[in-house]
Image 1 (tube, rainbow, N blue to C red):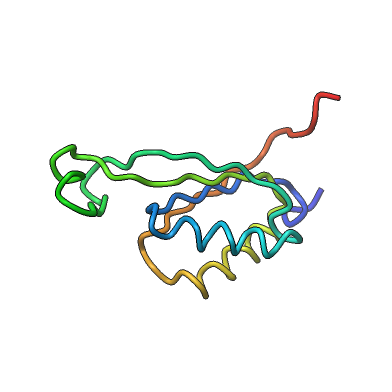
Image 2 (image 1 turned 180 degrees about the vertical axis):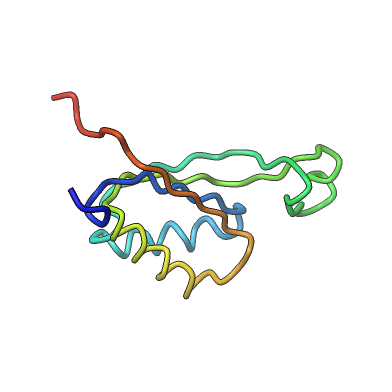
Length: 105
């Protein structure tokens, strides 16, 4: 199996004010993101951007996390597309090898 066809887990973390537009972009490209999960998460730490006083007081910010298992080439193409549309340091990503994935049935 080549590196480009090997599956990866692509994770995207974004502030909630970017979430709808980014999810819509993923849904508009089922060839690159045929399925994914999203969930609310909270960001902590020095590099987190707070929106509003409430987040400053709580010390954590509302974010959304999206994960998908796709071929590495598709993940790279998707990241290139997202960089064009969401050129911001507020969207963080990481990619790791998927050792195995599939359905139980």
